[in-house]
Length: 181
Image 1 (cartoon, helix red, strand yellow):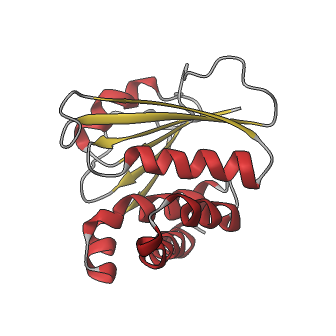
Image 2 (cartoon, helix red, strand yellow):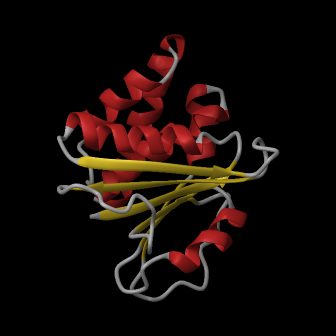
């Protein structure tokens, strides 16, 4: 079982990211997954997170106990959720121009990507940063396959944005392969 916390602030696409990862595992890889989400009353701009659990067996308790993986897109979210990360085997996947991971155990692995800059420079809009992050996450963790994650992206985003979202995924995936292979 793998417990994943996706975090950032409202408007960054945290919930969609979680849905993509969970759906990739459940529908395209024949695993079990669960999703729970939380956000502040203001939603856009406030702290936001989602929990995804992926398992080869039925999930009996659908909430995180200790995260195996923390995906984070804001410093505030990192500060809030990094204490729940497993100390001996945790992984942090972070937006490296918005988050500075600090205070982590030396055994925690970190993987950073300039997702916002990639989205802005390559696609003209920072709204694709979450899908860049999902592509990057897919490359560095190998928890779900590239094909499954890409199919999940295509099935969950609005039809008129599929092309740019697939490009965003591919850019994040390529960055992960290039810098952390």
